[in-house]
Image (cartoon, rainbow, N blue to C red; front, side, top):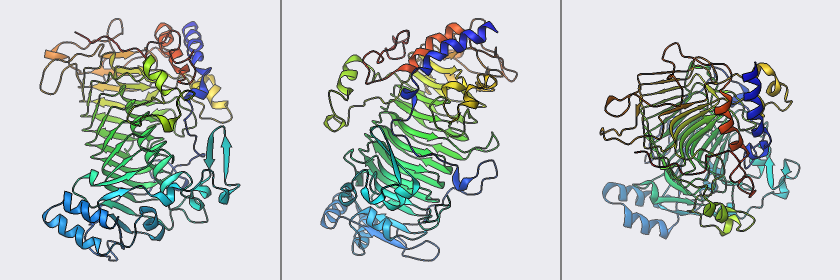
Length: 548
């Protein structure tokens, strides 16, 4: 009993900074697609439809977007052979010069083909935020304008460079008239089609209740929040897209299901390159969102997901970030907490030692001294706190499978497992469940770390982590089995007497208070408060020494 009290009292230090844990740009209260959740949620991952074939009932109407002579020059400069001829033929059919204009005309099942060029979407960029035309459909909290669904439907470009809002005027949380839209760049490489913001819009592309959205083969850069964003959307694909220099997130989904992130590149994000937040609720019976063959680097976090439930991430690379991967249960206002049921396998998680929390970076990113518009967008300013030098962190999660990954050259910890009591989450507006004593130890439960290769590269060369596994000893049923160190050596951990094996696992209920104390004050981090840029007792923001 005393251990529980001490552990929770220590973690309570983090509760002093709940505003620091809240999203930088709060969103409206969100629901799972079509107002339902559970393993029987209907829907499917959209299928790709040919870009070059003309309009048909099966493939949908084709709308072509171009930049006139600028597209012609880029086609000649970058494409050859059949691809060049096809694009030149499409150029003759071009009727739109901005992607949003094509979206406005699109009906269900439309294919929007975007020819090589640079798309700044200037008509959209000129729309005000907030937009007085939609008075009464938004609220203001501090500097944040928080719009209802109707706000984004009726004033789509107030906060979004390109917006696809699929639910009709009835706003019944069901897609009606912008469903199964496919937007595809027709170049050879993603960079042939560039969608360019100026950090004046929160989102470059927002798919809101836009079931069946398929985005493919282009580059996006310079949002003030998300480069690509899908919200309350049942069925989505992000395919062969490069995201760079978002102030916060590269690719973000929230309260969405039946999705696929594939063959993506994400870098230069102030929070995460890839973020599937409030993932589908399947209670470990299904994985509703798949993330594969993607490369996320030079972000504060390569991958993160508060309430990232039902996610299957495999065959990706998360490297040269502050932290490689996290999934958690402590940022407020995320449905589906505590986080559960993600599977991370066959990923390479390595060299995540980039420190964006140095004194020099703190000074540069201080908004009181330098406005966002005056920063170099290629310089990452962190918007969330993570332990520099960590491969993968589970901060309050259950039923996760972490297996058959290469985790190496992370100078602090290869993998970290931390207890998060409910009162830190803030997911219950009434506070009742958050403060219920029965919920304070509802994680971490039944997380399994098996067959991971710790401290060496796929070619077998040694590249040690500072410590392979860190655990605060909280929860129950957590287990470690079959993990191998370099040359077959045992893995290292911070648990005296070793980690509990699989399948039985172990845990003491409450975390070890000495260990939780070393993490708690880190939650009070605030980049705009000089006293809290380096919270007392927190070592997350110093670069660990390189292991030998």
